Every structure is written in structure tokens, then in C-alpha cells.
Amino acid sequence: MKVTNIQALENIAKEVRRGIIEEVYSANSGHPGGSLSCADILTVLYFNQMNINPKDPKAEGRDRLVLSKGHCSPALYAVLARKGYFDKKELTGFRKLGSKLQGHPDMNKVPGVDSSSGSLGQGLSIANGMALNSKMKSLGYRVYCVLGDGEIEEGQVWEAAMTASKYKLDNLCVIVDNNNLQIDGTIKDVKGLDDIEGKFEKFGFNVLIANGNDIKALIKAFDKAKTKKGKPTAIIAITTKGKGVSYMEDKAEWHGKAPNEEQYKQAMEELKK
Image (cartoon, rainbow, N blue to C red; front, top):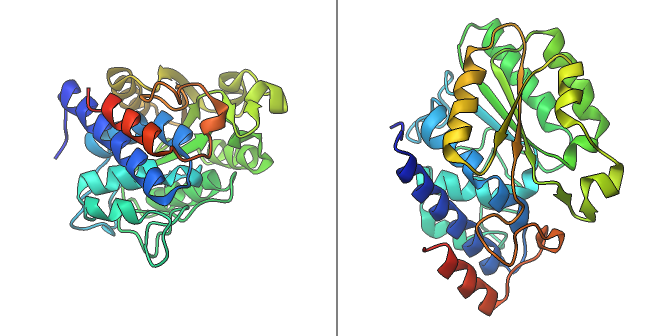
């Protein structure tokens, strides 16, 4: 069922963030910063935009999502659990031996995961193949690919971008989680990356810029992307790393670190407000 009420979607996003913290704390490892920054993006996609059915996770005509920044699996798992693909109690098994919820998504083990990911830079190539399949077979589904802004330093991303443009994949929507931080610092300091929107425009994309932590702005951007014909769309989603947890926000150190007990309690308390 499509959720259209903004307050309801914001509440779901908060619940997703609590799930992320629960996962990373339970595992004592993981990537909370980038997971929290893309929580609103995934919430809007799975609860407002995508044509999906948790009871039929392999339906041929379903919309697909490729989480190219696969280390942010806690966000995807929390959304899938909230959507009903599996029991939310399984989130505490994150990264534990025998659990299907490992550090990177596995499409062969986790219901609702459309593509295994983890090796950065490869997701857009996979999404291209899905989008081409939809067009060649007239299946009508859309494909969404979430990239990290640090991830787009990978050359394969731009090779894939050229392919998406060449084949006019207007059923493909790339979302860049532009939180401006990666494991070693800011994207500018690490690689000098700037003008992300200009780069995608030069590679033949329809480019939109949106506040990636604003539910209403995201819905507007995704709705607009659906109307564009003849070229793929890239949404540059401006986000805050660690969004929702005060001591994690805009801090590179929380790229891949678990909170201790005191920090866990503080985070969960903040996310209940």
C-alpha cells in the first residue's frame, strides 16, 4: 500500500533509523553514518514510489532497487523489515554467524534484495542491465540505483553512465547520496570531487537536486523523474551523514563504527522524539 501522508512517512523513517542503530549496536560493527543519511531516500522509495509486493518479492514486473553502496545495508534491511519482507526481530542478527543479514546485501538470502552489492562502483552497471531488460521485454518496471558520493570516484560508474545515456534508459533513476563525507574525510579532500550535477549532465542525464533528508522534497523529485522521457535521471540528494543522531551528524568518524552502550541509548532516545 502506498503511503502518502508525510507525517506517516517521517515516522517510518524514524523507525528505520532506530532499526539501523539496533543492527549496528547488536553487531558491534557496521556503517551507521551513510545508512542514516539514506534512510529517508529508501523510505520514500519503498513506501511511496516503488511498485512492489512483499508477498511476491520476485514478481517479474516489480520495480527494482540496487543499493550500490552496499556497506549501508543496515538501512536497506531496516526498510525491508518494516515493509514486511521478513521479521523485524531478525535485525539484531546483523553481521552474526548464521544470519542472512550480512554486512553486504545478498540477493540469494534476503527477500526483497534485488542485487548483491558491496564492491563499490558496480551497482549502476547492474541497474543498467535491469532497465534494459524492462524495455526489451516491455515489462514496464522502473529501476532505482543508490550511489554514494565517495563511490562515484570509481571509474566504472561513469562508463555505466555513458551506457545508460546511450540506450536512453528513462526508466532508470540514479540517486547520489551526497552527504559529502567518506571514510577518510570529505569527498573534496579525498579526491577533489565537485560539480556532481554538472558531471551527470555532461554524461547525458536529466539531473535534479533535492534535499535527501526531506520527505516532501524527495517525493517531488521522484515524481518528476517519472515524467522525463528519452534519458535517465540522476537525483543529487543532499544529505547529512549520521542524520537523526546528534553526535553522529556530519562526522566522518561514524562512517564505519558502532556506538557503545551509552551512545546507543542516547541515539535511541533521540530517535523516539
